[in-house]
Image (spheres, rainbow, N blue to C red):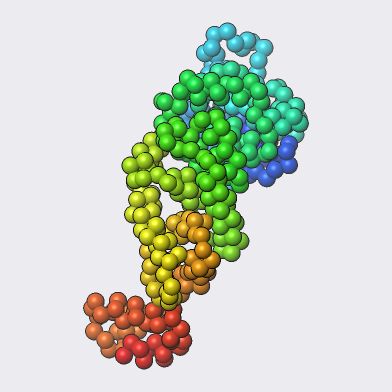
Length: 401
Ligand code: CTP
């Protein structure tokens, strides 16, 4: 369908980037990136118009996003000559603008394109040895200035390497070491550094990636004291187990995976160190509670969970209901004793979702005058339910009265 529009407009259009990479490697990927030789925005608008889709465009970049009614998105970019003519020595004349566009990308594995015009639909274009490097399982930059152009690519290299079980090529590896030595990351904004780290920590196997970052001495760019010794590796293993357990158990519960991993990464840090790391990464204030109040309170909770002999359900509930899922999962990963682990899993699986049958409305119907008493009554009813003292609605009514 995209190809038809391209044909009608006399434009060459290609699928590019991660989608093609993952297609060639038989991985799932639903991010459609299209490059058009010519005016990508006009192309996106025409396509959207024909099909009744919406378009967001950025004329200064020549890019557009087509948004279909089911929310599915297609990114469209324009490959234009003038745009790439800046480094004066490039052989512009014999180079297609697609080739120039692909040459500016991070790694060879990301430089394939598939033509989508009808006449040559499906033709795989591989100018820079992407298929060769996929066979060799290698992550390689296209040129020596790649990390100068964009230091976040260092983190991307590690992410792709770990995700696909590849290795970073020798030259590329040396360029990373050079980037570290020359401190290319000094001017990297916290926002960009954070979003790369987040992607790494959200990926399937963050342990390998963090280990790699430690190996390249990248962790000190987050905080000078950050390390990844055996103890922290164990903690990461434990976090991984807990997250796998949780995701199987509660398929559609959403939580911030990266935040649990960050808690593990910063484990052992004092408040000043955490402070400095959050500042460096420009982590938004809305997340700060987790790393300050909740971290501190979580520590106290774990201490009690490990030591206290008796703890009835309502007590456990009142203590842990103040913590977000991310912290609860982190505490579960840290818990040493069977007792503490059991208590945390009991809260997560059985207690967290318990609610009493009575509500403010029913209390009103019962003729109780609204006021602070409501909270007291409902809390007491919920506690009784958690501790198995009431079962039916009538039980609750009787207790409320
Ligand atoms: N790209 C780049 N330099 C960057 C970021 C991206 O050259 N710092 C290029 C890559 O070639 C990539 C394309 O832009 O293929 C799209 O980027 P993105 O969507 O971030 O990456 P994907 O390759 O799709 O990876 P993922 O599967 O993680 O989304």
